[in-house]
Length: 219
Image (cartoon, rainbow, N blue to C red; front, side, top):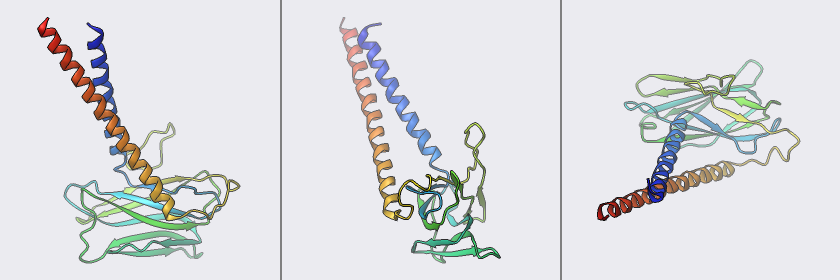
């Protein structure tokens, strides 16, 4: 096998591997997830729940998120959705529910919705889990409440979770909704950049392989 053929095959393989990695990332992102850049133990944070619709026949019309008994939780206004905050007998906030208003079709299979919540003070622990229940227009409810496996393996329906930095590392109150949007923008840009690399590698590999084939026929 010529050196040129080896290079072309390697480039094609690299492009395919990059594409598969991007597909795997997209699959993981189909779960209900939580993101809170800058969240710290004992502080306040803006948590963004990203909710995609996995059903091909029904839309997402409701989301309930359980909280670890917090003293403060404020929802961001979301047109077409109503919110309810539940408290326990100690006046601690234990759950927040978003429900699509009448006439709002909800989140269909080609969309996702972000539900934003400002909460605090957060507990003094490394991570916080927010078990969630996703309600569909056909009445089905999917529970996202399973913890990560002991070996780090992801369960079928993982609970949304955020990591908390130590309380002494900066200002715990300096988190805004804009920080979350910037982080998501950077993530989207990175995905596009990686996707472009994969496509470029695949195209270069295909061109080199075609050139090698044509030269082989001439010889």
